[in-house]
Length: 136
Image (cartoon, rainbow, N blue to C red; front, top):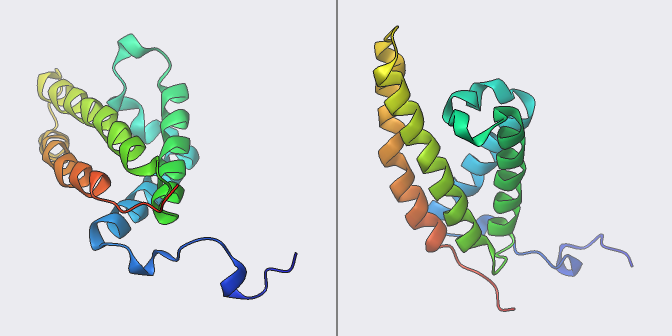
């Protein structure tokens, strides 16, 4: 089957998606890519009780890329999966903020950045849950 015309490609172009969904797709794409290329950046978000930060970082990077693709194509599962992923990331953001605040060697910039990340998850969660889907 020849797919040279845009009419034959069965994927919605994200141009008609809400701004919040577009921003979430961009954030998931960039963050997911960084998870896979420079995983150590995300290790501080993984509580030690969960085990290998590397495994969690790779898994969450793949999940972010999958959610970006799902949101872009309006997959029915994507809004709830994205919200679930963001809820898990939110726990990691809380962990990092608390750990940075309690650290023996306090780094004011890291503490501030860590705490600023916590409330940013709320509009992202809202954007995920309000993302449109296509009919099944």
